[in-house]
Image (cartoon, rainbow, N blue to C red; front, side, top):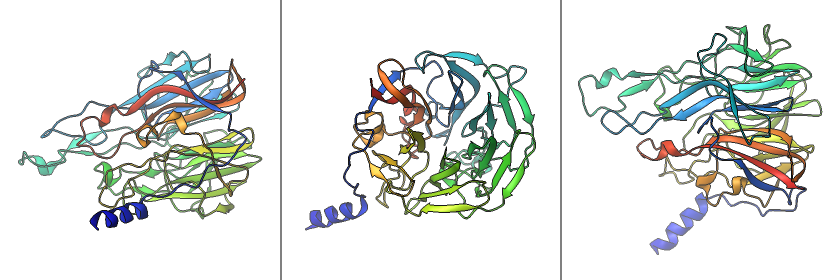
Length: 402
């Protein structure tokens, strides 16, 4: 009898995916382009395609586990301030800019990099700083022994080649933030959403984490105007954005890392100017999630990846990352593809906080492809001594074989 009850509870908690259906991408395949890229395991990383070159910019690499009583240290990471370039569609890489050079921007992760004309523009992000927890000064069993006080950036930088960077402003009028979204629409840069201060899941606060739903615009990255102080969508971080047919689309995101139910979104919104927003759907076919990506491939939205918390209330730090990929012609009606991103065999192979670009598929393929760079597969169980290894250093391609 107990087994029947437990089975019923599990069935009620675990969301059931709708069946896959035919799509225009059924013949596309996931292929590893590079493994063990020299930029190393990175999450919260940014990538862009500028001209014929791919660039990987910044990010974080988890540091090895620190055992009790000094650790573990939630979020303990090396933060990068470098730029890497590939001229062969992600196969080989060269570091073209290193942290500490004269024109360096401070190392960061969970930032944004967009392409505006012939240049890339870097915006926002955070680093990782810890201070001793005063409560642990006289108590050897106190935990956590450190507290995060990350810096959140509101500076803007640009580069035409990844090697030389120019600071456009040291202090944009929008508040410093990480997990922000940014895109270029009709030649202007838009910054929206994001958060400041660390979440309680990674020993954040005080101060308490603050989420944003403001929208800012700039044509040059120097002068910024606030388009709206509060868009109609709920304040969030970790959302994905895409531009198509003169519209900027916003997909999903989070207002917390852990909770019951998980504090994630799966709504879709769009705008032509950042001020007036239309609700495309309050609940897309894919499950609520942050840290995912939505790209435009052959005129169609393709969304996949992201973090999924365990559906079981008692498994607060467990993971149930989404092993699905979805397509939509309008952002409202979604179809699940049969493919599993990165050819993952279990949900532990699904990533979040990676980045993507759409670029030519290259030899042996037909048309454009989606490329992914790095990514995170950690959970929030900081007492697991293996978690720091679950960040990736590879490049994958979703393409149609030619």
